[in-house]
Amino acid sequence: MDIAAGNCEFINAIEAKEKIAIDVNSNIYASVIGNVHVINDSFFNLSNYIDKKCDIIFASNIFEHLNTKEEVILAIKICHQYLVPGGKLLILQPNIKFTGGAYWDFIDHKLPLTDKSLIEAGELAGFTITENIPRFLPYTTKSSIPQNALFVFLYLKLPFVWFFMGKQSFLVMEK
Image (cartoon, rainbow, N blue to C red; front, side):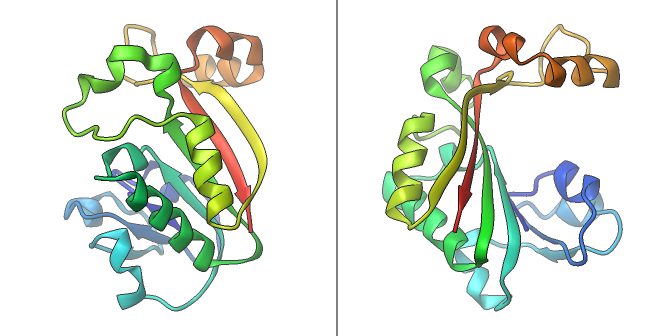
């Protein structure tokens, strides 16, 4: 399951028996490739659409758009509810600790979050944190650095570079 699936880059790139993409954006239908169950609504209304559990839920760049910290905790609790035992919540999230003021360059960012605040929310929701990379990916793809497959491959193979360029955290939480 991909919550806040956006342009469906993640859900289209993975192989799975079943895939679910959720987003409030109505353009989600145009972005889906293949067999994906699309839910065009808020993640908070998920119970209106499915009752099955997932092995993996991916949440990329969503929590900073929520209105309150209580909504972040609720969203993570909902993820916990929809995972099978041993299931994983994968979170890719801008880390205000490393983005600084650039965090607010996007008008729809409402909540300042760090890897530590997400860890706390995950533990409150009943998750065990199995991985935390505070500096993983660059903050935005809107950059002068070319974004071709070779550069992405090299970036991912050279973790020491993450310390200099990583502004987004990657966390794995297990139910």
